Length: 440
Image: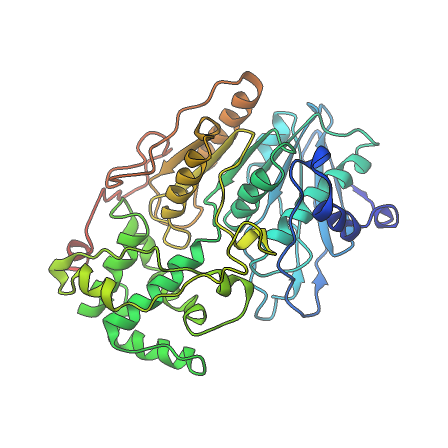
């Protein structure tokens, strides 16, 4: 193990991040990103120390804003894999602590000769812009740890919010990475989905959210909706809406909804009632076309007519707005990008993959995008074989130039995900409707 406690005397990541946000396109692709500001609170750092795997060296320490980890195999192949971690809440007793973990396929990377690096980011919360700048800055920390030897190729990978970081990086710095692997990637339109669920809950329950009583209003709704698996009739209606507007019926959707039925409804009601955070200002539900199993009672036409709509603030939700991370992706990528998504992910639903595909196709870059679907019942619960195969296929794509096979994320997903799921999960339900799943 090697600790580079004095690295920050030579390199301050804050200064590097500031430089990246205004750097000319010649070195880093397009000009960089201006991140949404970090939450205004005091941050503490956890010890980043970790033990290297056999045949590798571990480097760790602090940068100006957080902590990092780097692992370099003794038989290094000259390539670096950056890993962007997912959302970490900034609330609760540990919400102020910044931590660095390990890459999710660390053992495979080291075995194949890849070095990897990751950082905490300089704050917790939903901060993909800041996460991207801190992740990019790892390349300089890596080079210093590696006796001045820079990587020949750099891959960008990430999970959940880290997947948002990956997509954002591939778009905003389109020539900086050899390829990207976005696992269960979130994105700005996720919060459109959450706000749309909140608006549907208002119609279904007859309870409206108010700025000064969001928690109390949500509790009233819960009493009328029930909780999984004990849905009320109104609860079945909202469950149907959540599944239909998140990508439609698909394997494990009901299982994935078990933990997300109430949180999806209560994550972004602030956007409906005038919250002025950049993310809430950017939320737009005007494009959401509600669908529902009409045998449950409520019609889609009635729901679409009555649901409260929120228009995105054009000052922030436009390509020239101040914060790139809250603007829908433009699809202007220049390097191979692979994504992975679970059918039963109702935290970050597969509808975001559909939006990504449409953006990339509209930009004429569909030859650079491969998307894969997996039959799993929760967020980011990929197996090691699934992640390893996706990464290896991305590397082969970068090195040999042959696009790997993927799935069609559009259309009917009721039996999606059979090609790349490994292994098939126990009790695979196939496609199932809300009505069938909740009948007693």
